[in-house]
Length: 241
Image 1 (cartoon, one colour):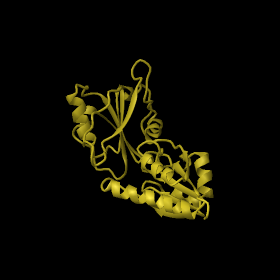
Image 2: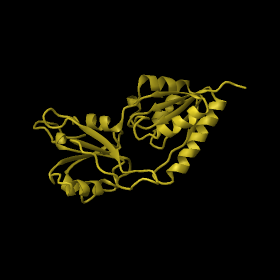
Image 3: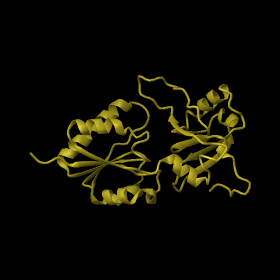
Image 4: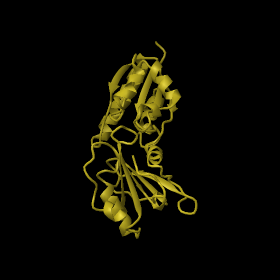
């Protein structure tokens, strides 16, 4: 029986191809097969020119069925290839459903290595020149998403923290703002939204929590929503790009 291959869960970072780690890029170049997410760009896939490429992109809805199929594909690929890459947007260990994939691979005795990536929240903070923490103002940060498993409540409790970062927040941002206002958060609390972070079509918008409650404009890519006093624009801060 042929030896099982090794699977690498690699974080592609926020989108720009030069924001993947050196290790991630090296392993992509050596991969036999790459299973990649919908948010992975063609420029990123150019780094694994020799590999077979399999799109396993998925959006909200029917997540459990899609994830089960991806798990099966990973196991099958590890039986047929020596170097298997599962390429995920951002970081595999944050909202990347890595737990399901690790469990499936470990159950079959398949070796796994995780290569971290720059998560979108950190890239968005860099892109807007806006630290998520600030001495004397914000000493805690929470990442959350309104996307849940089918058997979990649709709107879980919001974390109590100084800076809130909502992933995949485009359609859910207004509901989040309403809940925060109902909890007593200030209507003039600073908010920054970043669409298509780090990509050529990146779009940054600054507003207040009261504005966010009215919803966001239609987005054509993933939207990250950052909320908190630490996001207040500095006196001499340059305009957003």
